[in-house]
Image 1: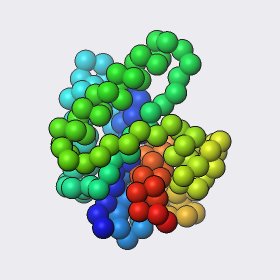
Image 2 (image 1 turned 45 degrees about the horizontal axis):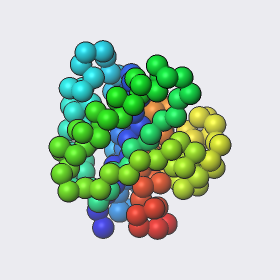
Image 3 (image 1 turned 180 degrees about the vertical axis):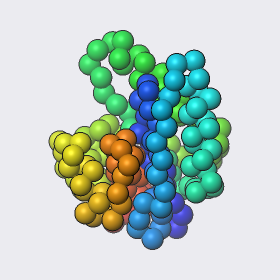
Image 4 (image 1 turned 180 degrees about the horizontal axis):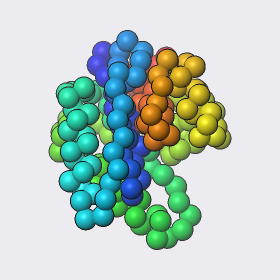
Length: 152
């Protein structure tokens, strides 16, 4: 087996995590995104992920839900740019979108888990200490992608 990549994206931040066949978060990083450079910064961040997962089996991307139209538009553009970058870097890798409650449930932390619980979960269950909430989310997205693709 290979590795999977989990991505947590918003209009201002990108975090990715690589979960590998040894059952651990192999690497995780978070990047701030700035207006006017968002697409370039997303591609650069994902190029760093490619160093740890040259040919991932799957990519999981959180598709955040926002009830306000302006927020949904901003985050939707970031998700679209992220998907485009993934498809250009990993042409043959399937991309799967997860709703936040969906990846939480599949990873085993609980669909309505708090941000604090997600951070605790990746430490308790996988021995990974995230540097930010975004890294914790990306780690759980990668775990959910692995479980869905390969089982526990």
